[in-house]
Picture (cartoon, one colour):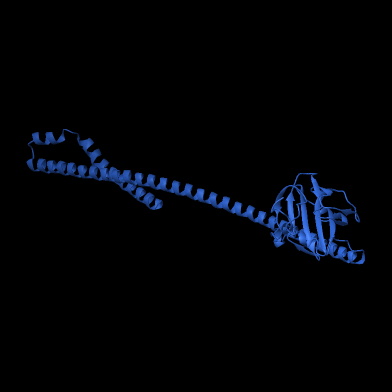
Length: 298
């Protein structure tokens, strides 16, 4: 539309120049004749016919000049309208250009955000894959350790219990091994779909970790993913596990009673904050430890 308006304006300018040229020609003739010539013709009675023709010529000249002036006015009006239309079109084009620039900037920003999000997702995906691998390795290492301990326990003297299924009868009666806040529960899904086989209790660094029941320490060492770990055999196939400790106070073979301090809370094994990981196992299989405590939370 802008090009069309510009073409019309050029055409109007050309027409205006033509009209101005036509108007200038009779004007130059009138200048040569002089403004008093019609009056002289009327006063000169030499040739009435010639005088009439000359007066008619002047009348025609006047009418033609007036028409040309009107045409020039019309062209000037057209030019004014076209200038206004061109200015309006120019403003519209500027606004459109600004809008397009804004949209382009938004699209560019959105594309950059999407790129950053993809990079983040890829990094998160890799991190989740690594975390899943770590958790599976940790879980596999613990399962292997428990199997080895069970085989070893089968070859040694059984830990004496007060009565058959003594530990099982304590269901709902035990005290929590540490004071703190429950931050992960048995069966809760971890990263990568791996579930918790025990509970995680956030506690103060160095606070005491106590045995939940009497038994014999069958493991007291470092285990990948769980850090410093203590495992107690309570007889009848029951084991309790205490991980992420800062220090271990009991050695393998030592006997403990309920409430004995066996370790202190720490962040070993890759923890970002101090906590105790606690499990109860029966026949090597993890069970929900919360079912053994008097209260739902430590």
